[in-house]
Image 1 (tube, rainbow, N blue to C red):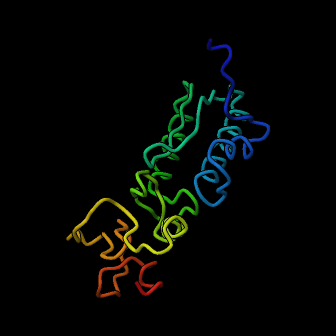
Image 2 (cartoon, rainbow, N blue to C red):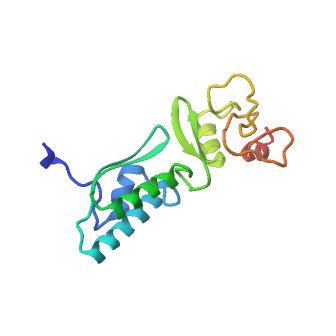
Length: 168
């Protein structure tokens, strides 16, 4: 059974392999992961080491997951560092981001990309994120849309930058 499993990463076409798993987001997570495996390939070529076997790359519960088989501690640390960075950045554009609950799905998007996705799904709704019904006292939660993680500090209504720009 294990012989049927193929490496998710084709080290001759890293970008295409990553985009097949994560979609085309060159400024977001697929760009980060492409850069990671490009560095891994350069490292392996320099050391004469075997490329790691990557079983799967995906987003799950708003976090990047890379399942692999590799005993090289340097490569493992490169993968761990990339995952940690990705989990603090927007899946689409790499801006700073927090995991949001959007229509029952956890996703890690900056307020701009989150608003873009949410308003395409619900063009007339202002409360876009989370399951909170009452206004949260947490100073990092937008009082209008519910986005957690970015607040425009110049706004006296405790709104995220996207809500301020939309004048919500």
